[in-house]
Image (cartoon, rainbow, N blue to C red; front, side):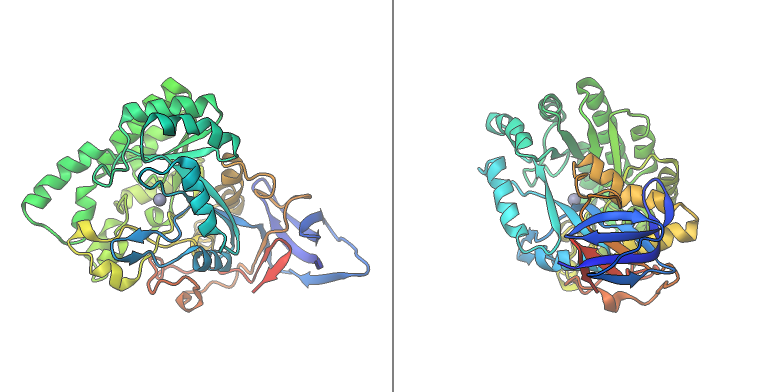
Length: 429
Ligand SMILES: [Zn+2]
């Protein structure tokens, strides 16, 4: 294993930005200092003018998801290669709990698929069924080292929903065992009510996806979750929060973490009118400009804890044959563009790059127990580094992508792709 000195770069951590050299050896960071001198078996990489970031974490991905007649575009292999291309050296994916499967079986099955990944993979455990066996398994799963569990307040038709009472039961057990509850927060009744008139009128265009799943669905579900988390004390992480009103409730709730995604910050529901509108169908749907603005405010104020992608891309043809809108496979890709697009946005908007590192690195590392190797560039952590030239802003970058999908939601936004990504001491690119 090579020893490498990264010289003259600007190290960007969650709490400071310093001009420092970084020395790595045997897959680990062994020194960070001004003017490190080395002799002998060291390669030197000049990072003058470069920003040196820790390896990024995408805490919300879905690799290789089955749909009616096929699969999502990225499996763990192509998805992880594309992640690495964009500076993400670890993902946290979700288990898929099949009918009659135990939680342990669902974890084992997902870990097997993840063996093809070229980056680190951790897992959140989906709880999409409520029975006494599942409840009994939760403490064991936490002992096995899986501390985050996701539930859904919707998708009744797909047999994935838990009622609020069931979620409260689950919360209590998770709290007692020191775990974390993650919630897909869209109220099923609000969605039902909004969908009925659309179905009655046979309205099928992709734009009705946003009308069928209105902002109130999120607001009602987050209100309920705030009450539950206050009663149980359970730390509750709202995945892909996307409305101004939802954020307003979550920010005042002591036990709540907030995740949002680039699509909810950068895109609004007007895209559903586009010819490729079906491609933007994801649940929850895209919202209004006011919501995007509120989320950016939340990023600046510290109300948003994590930026992740909900990565689940499909091929153009697979999405477009899905009309009526209820049949469009749900999901947008993003793991590869998370860091390059957001880095440019933070620079353009004058937001501190330390804040970016908090959102895509330090906070997810802390919340999901990945601190041993992730979260910051510091002595003893795994040698995962992302080296970036902040002046290399590109507007035509889709040709660089390694994801298998033939479409990207963020192609209109400039991006800064890494010059080099280092994973476990291995230099990629
Ligand atoms: Zn998701």
